[in-house]
Amino acid sequence: MKAFWLLAWIIRERDRFTHQTRVLQSIAAHVPLRPVARHVLKASPEHEQLRCSRQRPSGDRFTWFPTSRELVRLVLPGVLLGTAALAEDAILSSPRLTPVVKAVQAVMPAVVNISTERALRVADPYESYFNRFFAPNVRSITESVPLGSGIVVDRAGLVLTNYHVIQRASKIMVRLYNHEMHTGTVVAYDMDNDLCLLQLEDLTDSSLTAIDFALPDDLYLGETVVTVGNPFGLEHSVAQGVLSAKNRSLREGDVVFDDILQTDAAINPGNSGGPLINTDGRLIGLNL
Image (tube, rainbow, N blue to C red; front, side, top):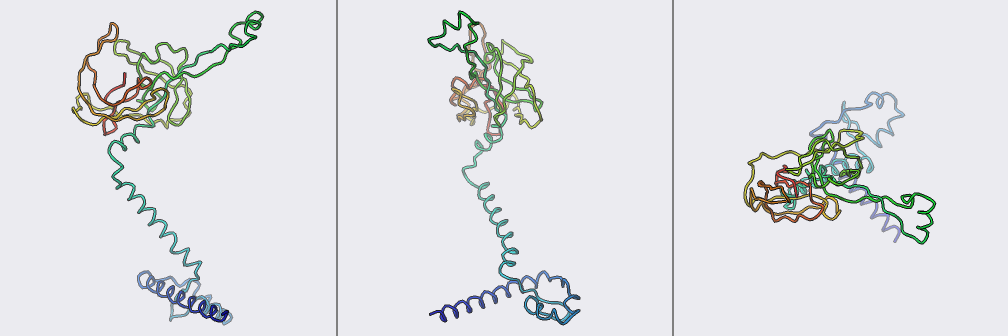
């Protein structure tokens, strides 16, 4: 039985060596191999045995017979590159990669979460004792309260949002897509149009992604639109709808808006200040 397996192994190795030889001869027919160390191999007879085991002379040139490990090193990188290219082509040609998906991928890094901080008093049986001998604010904790959304409009750190989002905030905190936290300072605001421009502080680099603006009249009724924001504090949520109407009127207290875009995309508390975009990934409005 051992002799049988040994014979089978010898036949398999012979076939594999023959196949490798044919592959390399086919390659050499198109790309001739350079005769590396030709003079060294011919210099002394003691290299004859080594040359016969790895290289066979053929006139002024020689044919290289690689080992299995060397053949893998030659072929495997090309196989891996070809597999990666095929996988990338399959992803790019996938029907799932719709214009909406591409627009969301482009805009998502520019959407921010806006929050504030507030102090909460800690209620416990010893509260009256602490209030008697210490200041009442000693026994308190600070928590982050989500207010709404915003969109980066300039890589220098300018964020556009609604004025009512930050109107009562004592301290404005802006959370970026990469989870970095920055303090926001009000640069300018317009109460009548419910707009506010914030400047991010303590920026270490200019790797921010800014959104592109669409033209004012570049709107089509029935076209697909997408909202991105932080409804109920759930960061970077996406909702899809259509543009239902243009130039709607809306009264908020004493202020009347007459340029409202109507959409059936879901807009919930926390979406305020977030972008409404078209399938080109361009900003067409802010969520109220």
